[in-house]
Image 1 (cartoon, rainbow, N blue to C red):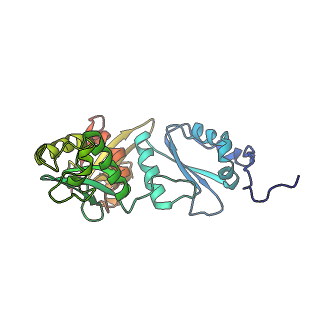
Image 2: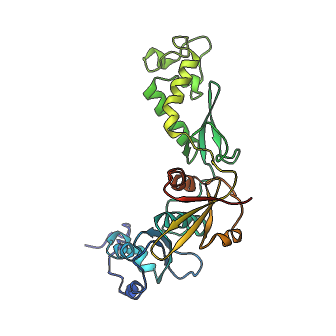
Image 3: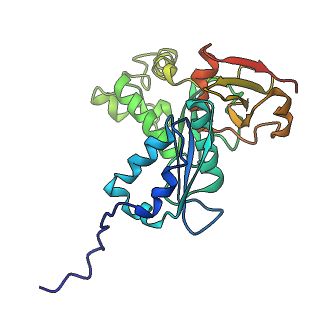
Length: 283
């Protein structure tokens, strides 16, 4: 039987013998690793681990990564003091270098949040306001559609009115269609007050509230590992870089260029949890 040439060619896995030599240099320590192809400036893949050698070896055993391994010609690595430094550096490098095989941690230019004011809710865009200093923002969404979907989900769970939320057009002088289906508690027709409706929305959103940047300016978060100490310099939830001593902080960028959702998600708990030494830096 003749092969069907319309079917995509299957990746046949072969153990990457040509990369065995790279393993000898990889440390059993935290950090970031990079798979390089022919380009010296654009890596194929960037990853992180608390044990670089172990994680890279796991790639070698993964049959579904045959295409990546065949294209890889060498592997480099950057040590960090711990897991936090590895998370921050991985996210930064992926945004800066846009590796072919990474499909996450890329900067979203349509980043949105839900903003509450008085009895209104609206979709706020990071390109219009500074998410690190604006109060009453809830959730981080890749785009407007994702923010609206979250709002619909909350409305369905809490029997909120689509019309009052701005999702649907509210018929003049009449209850919305969802009220007749008992899916709306009646803020559209006076069965509940606008204040009650807004309070229920605010309570449902509370667990997703964004925390405003709690410092006057830049801070350095100290992370101590085995034989390596780093100071991760942060401003407005944006990771500026890491240095080995406080005397070196002014060699880094001095201020955040934009709100970084990945930086916020990585840093919020470590900065507020009290488990790391935080040093406020002069402006």
